[in-house]
Image (cartoon, rainbow, N blue to C red; front, top):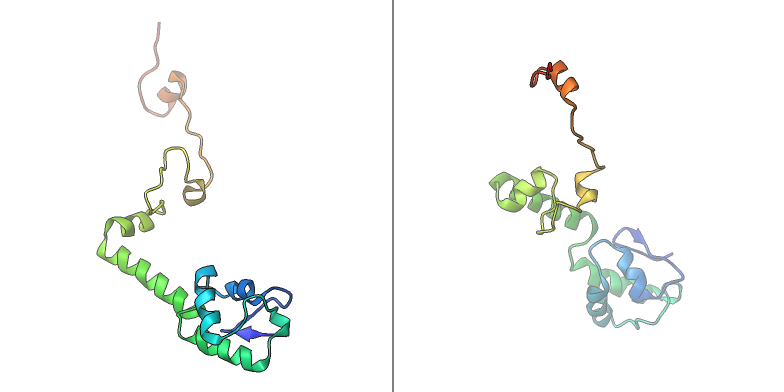
Length: 135
């Protein structure tokens, strides 16, 4: 079992895909990591030698991954909220931050739909609104 940055890599996958299981490492970063560690991308995780694993660990340590990266992202969001910039306000209001429309979409951010219907005049009078027609 190969363990890098506190994450167990999937044994049956190629190393270039398996490294993406680590938070903060994507397909683009993997190419640079494998070049630095001098490991073939087509090699399977289960076929790695202990020397290759140690070279990969050293290459991954140079990048912010897992806990350190999650902490940095949350601190950045807190900073935006603190200075009350536009993006920070959108985070506070739990709305999309990157310019997406909210009139028809954004259900994952805004939550389940709440139907707001029209109220009949008879019911409106009960709630203290307009008086109902007496004619």
